Amino acid sequence: QFKGTGPFCGFFLLATNTALIVDLELVKKILVKDFNYFSDRGLYTNAHNDPLSGNMFFAEVEGWKRLRAKLTPTFTSGKMKNMFHMVTAVGERFAATVHTRIGGGDAEGHGKVLLVSDLSGRYTTDTIGTCAFGLECNSLDAETPDFVLVTNSFINRRRHNKLVEGLIFSFPRIARFLGMRIVSQHVHDFYIKLVEDTLEYRKDTKLRRNDFLDLLIDMMEREDADGKRIEGLSVNEIAAQTFLMFLAGFETSATTMSFALYLLAQHPDIQERLRRDINEVLAANNDQLTYECIKQMSYLQQVICETLRMYPIVPNLMRKAQSYYDTGDPKYYLEKGTLVIIPTIAIHYDPQYYPDPERFEPARFTPEEIQRRPACTWLPFGEGPRNCIGMRFGRMQTSIGLIYLLRNFQFSVAAETEIPCPLIKASCLVSPENGIRLRVDRVEGAKPIIREWENL
Image (tube, rainbow, N blue to C red; front, side):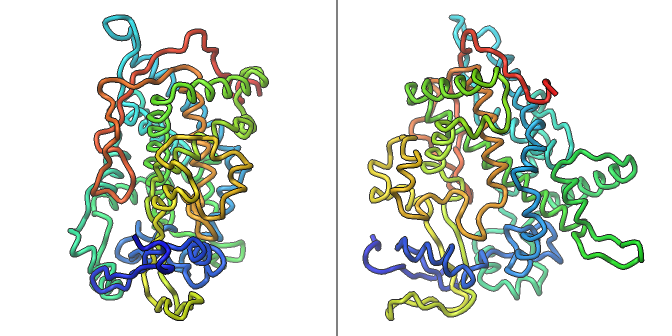
């Protein structure tokens, strides 16, 4: 409605000036070129009264800079390689669990209809559990673990009603003065106790797993040989970052995998081409899955990118103007404190950048097609200095899960599959309202995948 009339349209969220950006050039400036004007997400954080809100995603500018500088080294390619074997071990159990769930198939001996969104969530729970905390959650084989129940309660059940939330975000200083919190007490207690118990256990046993928590422990406050205090992360800050990793890694990767399978089930030709791509790369590597193999599976990456275009987990990006900002047009400017909303999902469905945007077409993400599009037209992980720091881990986790599934199983639409898929309206994320159910059949003659560590 507003595109072409100006760079943004304005409205009020209670007492907060808000600008919905409708011009791609201004999107680029906000996220990249003029990032210093918009380095705050505009989210409420109160690390003193609400420690888990002190994570890097919610943090204000200075807190974000400090945490980003400390945490960036934990997500390098080298660190991802160290965690790779942990994720493939879970991927192997993931495939075994699906085999068990299918059993003898239905009454006619065919596959079985499974709630793939639930299975994907169990897979990502186990990978985050082992990579972040060194815990064997075993959610693939058991009841829904506390991790999932607690985190889902934060995502889908608000601590406050919409009016109170609006007041908190409109008047953050007053809210902090009053000690207002956004994380429920039981969520806070669960994660603080989990981290404290794990830290104590690792200290007592001198256990080291080279996982995410070990990397955070290395950054803790400590004293040097002369007794001088070295600034580092506190226990509360470590709890906040592990909370963020589980929140981001569990829900986003599980939902991306579920939607990818949902789309592939509706497009069997694309599914077969992807399975062929996976098998060819593995065959060239003697059926061994390595970190480098994932990079070689170009069609898999195209499928994941197109899935994230159609179902970006975070539908909008938010920023807050740190000072007066001149857009270059005298009629349009942003005052200090203005909340800025970048409509990711609207950009992803703009036919100017993606012709026939409702169609599932992974070829949109060949290197040539990507080069033809302007920057900032694909934003599932954000863009610029404040993009998603865990992007590499999320892509790796999603890729490994899909590799194990598509190597061994074929997915198709069942009578229980909802098309189109209804989404949860009250959630801040793009999630299927009733889960995703698909028919799952075994792929005859599928060879087992050899995990990299088995040849060491």
